[in-house]
Image (cartoon, rainbow, N blue to C red):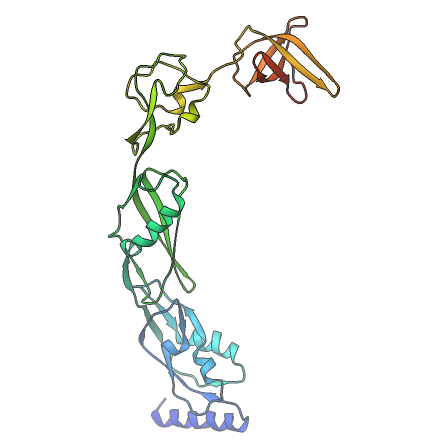
Length: 326
């Protein structure tokens, strides 16, 4: 089509739109653009080359015509898709002049951020969640220099991922940054060292010995690499005896101790049966050791039936609900 023919066509369309009193808009699309947003709007990829338009021109150019690529990457937007599938559908009262088809390259602008930029936020999160005593733990970020790309605009950032209130060693967290409709998930790796008060044996403790202040004491120890659940107060040792011989200077942990039994296997015990005003005790034979609150089997020596019971005192047990027996 010659230049003169194009002018004639445009004039014809303008006269036709004028006759119908319909707003007429010619849009000129760019070849390539850069955006700093999670979405692409018409104003980003085109400008107005209008013959006549109505008062809603601002709404038209604010129309979202696509989602932008991730920061630092690009995508293509087709001008025919923008006109036919978006603008004509949303603004049916507007006449859009046809233009040559274009594939517009839309690059998303980006800036580099580092995990270290949010060290203060990460430390605050950990200090609020960790229940080690203040001063007993230290936090060191292992990947502060790790970078991620985002838009050059404000970020909404939060930290998550701590799975225990008493972390130690390597801890993996997640830094989530939000910009508009887009999220950036960035792994955070910290090392948490812990030096705290734990119970340590002050002399050799033989198997079956009661643990108390005479054979152990609280001492500050680095337990960062200690793989057991340590004991941090003498109160936790009440009615506890050692399960094996413990050497001097050893950190005491839960698997080393067991509650002192108050019922021993083969002891005669009394099963307390409470029926309102009537309370009776029936003599039976314990078939396993039991500490206060433990569930043990006892034998009715007359019928040789085993009954499931709960230890409630020295040589006393009570039947569990339902009176399970075998």
